[in-house]
Length: 296
Ligand SMILES: Nc1ncnc2c1ncn2[C@@H]1O[C@H](COP(=O)(O)OP(=O)(O)OP(=O)(O)O)[C@@H](O)[C@H]1O
Image 1 (cartoon, rainbow, N blue to C red):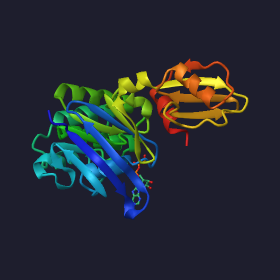
Image 2: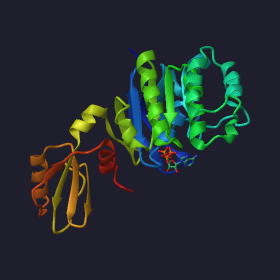
Image 3: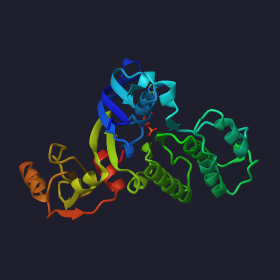
């Protein structure tokens, strides 16, 4: 089956300056939830703007449902539901008015999905959006996207403003929506931990490059965290084909690697680093993400 999204050799720089995306390649298969991860400024929104055809890449090719992203037909566009950072809405409208307004634009408008989410807010249907909290507005935005019944949902920072309970509610809804209705989703969020229970595949962008691209399961099984003490604080360590990344807090050194303990020990020996025995530690997805991309 043709992938829902396919990006090849994507490069982008704003005004010919620093490259924000440097040869990005990825595919999103139908029926999957795909997590696009990266620190602030990594290029997630730039990628989404290119996918939506709002931005023309400096070079490379992106296709959505087989059509070039900069020239998506109106029919195909109706199959894509986009949540942009900041969830712009017609805030002078009420919960009921915005439903009626949106419904005119979408042939497959599913009011029940929208109101199911709105009931959770516990607000009357004539409640105006501008009188809502940031998290409640996010909830309206998400309801409006789900009601479109899109085949592809692109959710840029969906968790913005949502408290822990609403986030969980939304994640449960999204996962159910995608699995039961055979949809596809591409999501970004700074709450990396949420991705652990949601996504099938991930890419991690760092400094314009893809540093991880795999299924979530393979990534979690593959990346290891070793810790040791070193009187010289790991001086001389550097990232290479064995050591994906490292950090040192005083004499305690953390090494992140896709290799086994023996390979890392051998590398430390080659680098003439004095170290205690390596202990292997379990990681959450967030710890793995920070381990690889660094704390700042
Ligand atoms: N219109 C623009 N003109 C110039 N530079 C831009 C523009 N938009 C984004 N950038 C730069 O491109 C880089 C990537 O920005 P982008 O918004 O894609 O990152 P992001 O991963 O979505 O970040 P965040 O998680 O903070 O939202 C940043 O260095 C940003 O300053």
